[in-house]
Image 1 (tube, rainbow, N blue to C red):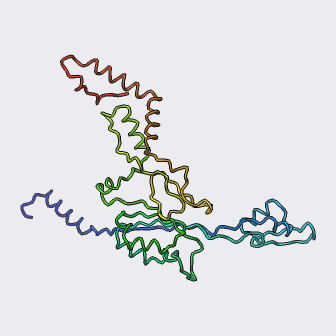
Image 2: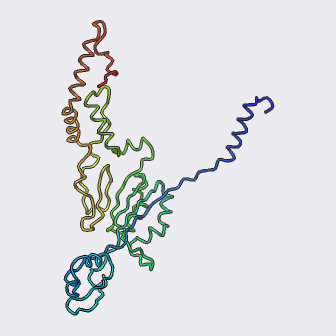
Image 3: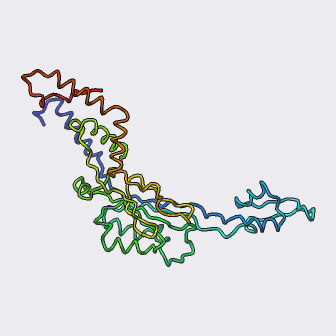
Length: 298
């Protein structure tokens, strides 16, 4: 170090100091469980009438799980009615787990999770949750999800639980191989519109044509997620995929609609007009195929 200049020695000292401060960052795979309180039972209006509960705000309080006190119109005496007297049996709360499992090692940790194990079928623990697990969202590579160990773990939750897969690509190459649709729907649509204006300047985005065909039904235990898909949790009688959102965002029909928007807006006609004027201004000795349309602005 004796041959180093002042600036070099200062830099060396800073590098050594930074190395000492640098700590190894441990990567963590975090999963979440979202639950709601138990769902109150249906308000039994006939029972309320038999107990002479006045129709109106008091019924709302009973629906909310509160007790009410009022003057009985028939006996002219004070009476207290508890919500359990006029409500059907409550239902377990809604539960959704969002699981991030990039490796089989993380799967072992998930299997050991007390929070998730409480929702497994055939478990009768005293501290069982007051909510019911309705769906699990799996953020995991396809290779991990399709492994025997992962599939057997999914079966531990029983057939009443839906499994929604959002496969995590381990690399850009894997994402392309899996033909995954981009989740940035607005950007993809914008790219398609610009391509209709001039595909030489704006190449058509690589859009898979069967990203989400809406063929999945409620009876399926495994649902492959796609952009803009909507899954209903409540009411439980309608739990499952919302069919209204299952139109393919990348279908040929959608591309025709986007082209129609470009034509209606006049952008396509304007682009053709500007392009033809530029070509007309090109000197005779210059090949018109070599026109610099990269300067096209409108």
